[in-house]
Length: 243
Image 1 (cartoon, rainbow, N blue to C red):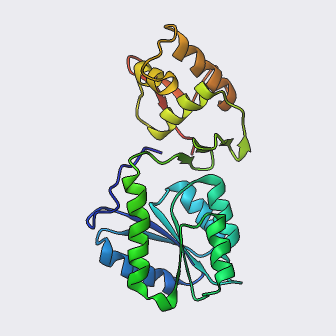
Image 2 (cartoon, rainbow, N blue to C red):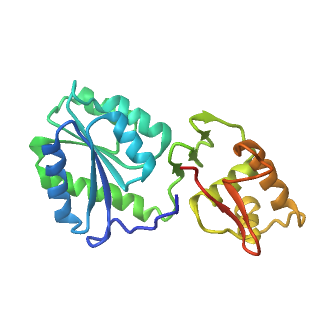
Image 3 (tube, one colour):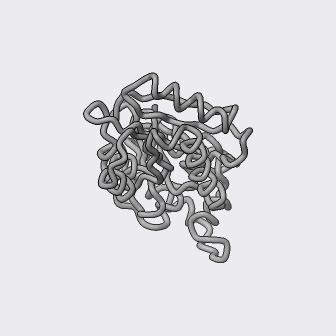
């Protein structure tokens, strides 16, 4: 997944929103009012939690809007599942103004909770505030999602390959993160050296090559014939996510 630098706070940015709702009408409603704030809005709709996670893994959005309407779709398990993968912004929309439900959702990792009586434009304003905080943080998102192959969170250090946790050293994680966030684009030896060890440390000349070999041994089906971390002659290495 290539890093996508988007200033979501600007009205004319192309903002991607994923709406999880058992109701197509609600999904259309969210799109309609969000497009007032972002005319170039791109939205997608998932009718249940499983499809929401699949959609998020295929193409991570800038924000997830969950319509909490049990028993059709309860936000709690979905928030938990999303937070196990990424720190992507989450807003819950609900007709339920119960404080207990709201607090539970926020403690699980939702960024905000909006009730219907607060009105659609308040929902838009709260969504804009959330993405503004993300945009103004100045840093890249701490997570990498590459289909069903790779889930990686640089904040808590968790790395999942095909849903199973693997143990990587700090250097291996740094290399994988740098390669995966630039999926499909060659990264030079110098770029990988800086990402893995920092600009002020000079490892031996073959260090990048040695650690790439170790990394391949842990994530490739056949490390001797790598298909995920490929060598690009004269350019470095490129990460290719299995499809």
